[in-house]
Amino acid sequence: MDVMGRSTKSPSEGSKKLSPMSPGSVVRGPDGEPSLGSDFLQLDIGQAPPGGRTAWLADRLRSAIADGRLPVGARLPASRVLAEELRVTRGVVTEAYRRLAESGQIAGRGRLGTVVVAAPAAPRDRTRAAGEPGPALFGSADRDGVIDALRSLPCRIDLSPGVPDLAAFPRTAWLRAERSVLAGVTPADFGYGDPRGAPALRRAVVGWLARNRGIRADPDEVVVVAGVAQAFALLGQLLRADGVLRVAVEDPGSLGARQQLEYGGHSVVPVPVDDGGLDVGALRASGARAVLLTPAHQFPTGVVLDGERRRELLRWAAEGGVVIEDDYDAEHRYDRPPVPALRSLMPDGVCYAGSVSKLLAPALRVGWLLVPPNRLEAAVTAKRYADLGNGILTQLVLARLMDSGELERHLRHVRLRHRRRRDVMLRAIEAHLPGARVHGAAAGLHLMVTFDGRRGSGLRDTDLAAAALAQGVKVHPLSWHRISPGAPGLVLGYAAGPAHEIEEGITLVGDALRGLRAGSPR
Image (cartoon, rainbow, N blue to C red; front, side, top):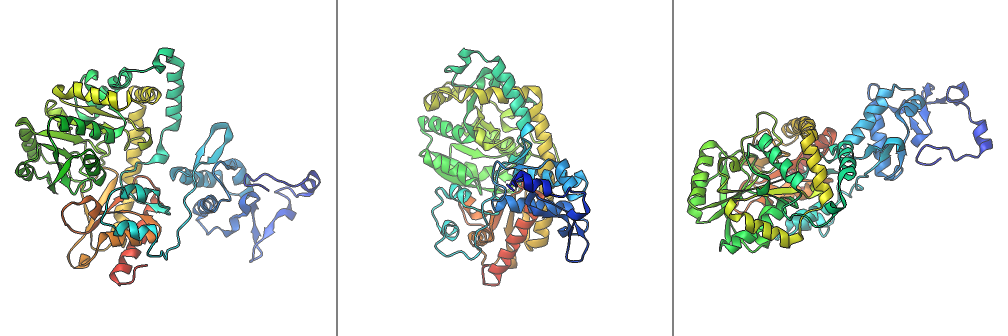
């Protein structure tokens, strides 16, 4: 028998096989009771605990994917067929399949049925040697490339921040839009286009920003970029041309954004963040002529720039300062409507960057940049010489999703999933991370927790992150995202994985924390 559940017996052997309903085909368990099962993975429903058949089946399938019995590309039996073989209701099987689909391990493929699409990395030995990548990664003072290095390491549960629910990517809607786009494009559309981006996408972005971020703009003001990272690179060129070589950044703030500026030749000036957001008074005192910030949902603290700070920041910009607004995960809010973007309040003083990386998928590499009118020509020129523009098909498909309302429907769908997962993480933190303080608004894709006072005394968050990785769980130490010293903490992503993984992951982080406090890291 192969992994698809198909018989590999010869015809003569097959003719001797008893039918599933034949009394002779019933296997007896240790207690003598009938134990009904399936040839597929030799599943024995008699092993399932009372009331836990769905969880049992999901765990068996998940284990088979992890150990290679169900490799990527393998097809699962139809839910009706497997339900009949196990003598369970079809709902038990469909719910188990749904759980694996939610975690991104299986997906429907039309006439091909349900197929394994991703396998987790094999669990690492929890007794890491000191020379293995985890301790070396977290113990190094050199932060260059650490996020990419952590991303490449195997783990069982990934609680890294900044990743949306990739399993929820709207494959059907995307495919439908792509077919429609391909049916309508002309040969000329496949040539070199406007470096600002496809007109259809620029029009769609203007509508999206007006509806969701309160920004009024003209399509000619939009520059389509390869994500916010490229927006930072282009803005860096513009700032250097103006003689601006020092850029203020939030502290704590995104390590990746800071490194992007430093790679472009800028020095960064830390400005503290408190419960009201960026300290604008400290920004003035820094002497920096430009600032990069995440006002709608600050990374990593999760706070929102308050009204008075916003007004003060805009006064600073009106006096000649350059504001770079990274509208980081602003769409994901769970207890209130999103605050308007700074760009909506002062178009002539704010450079605005956004993308679909936190809404659809980072791999699409599509974002947008809006700059004040006096910088637009320079921004378009920088984009032209960077790459001649983004790929056309992705732009046109995204435009179709925006115009049709599919992207808003997807946003409503993932908001519900993200909110449930955030609630699960909050409960798990309360249960398993005693003394941890959770920061920020009910929004975004991550939580920041800090450990202070007596319980946090002597704790290094890099040690905790390394100990968590030894348990098979990825997290970010808060110190990675700090410039100035501060309380130890973790930045935890909850959007990418299912609820059971979030709860298990926080439990393992709690185990790691207790091990460190006891002086014997596990």
